[in-house]
Amino acid sequence: MSDLEIRPAMPDDIPAIVALLADDPLGARRESPDDLTPYRTAFDRLATDPNQHLVVAVRDGRTVGTLQLTVIAGLSRRGATRSLIEAVRVHADERGNGLGSQLIEWAVDTSRREGCALVQLTSDATRTDAHRFYERLGFESSHIGFKRTLS
Image 1 (tube, rainbow, N blue to C red):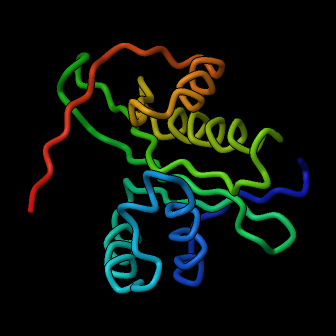
Image 2: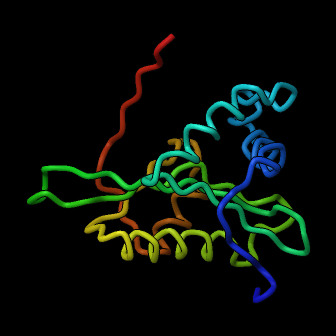
Image 3: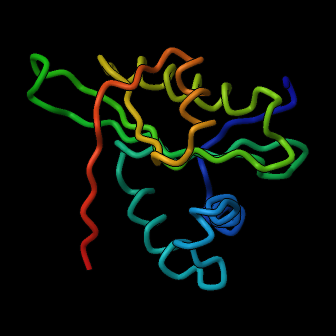
């Protein structure tokens, strides 16, 4: 997979990122690829925050993966900085080829460079294949997550 480039996302990448986010049963219900306005607004916020790393994986000029890495300062764990991996997506025809592992390893390596003591992620309870994938990469299921939707 040496022909793969993982790089910071640019505004022109937004349509491809949103298409990746929408290309599964959960994303199809919550994403709106027909209206990119809210995504562009969110991108502008991310682009100005040095603690946000939105990246794309590109092969042969085509966006084939994405993730967002957030660096979080905190007081717990003796003032440890941690990172949070979110919105990991790999194009359907690229799954099973190691791309997801490369994206996660990029996030782990970046977290180390940022001085993080811990890298964490959440995964929807229905994504059992993803859970096995993360466990293979050394993540352990250690917490129960909760969400509250705000309108």
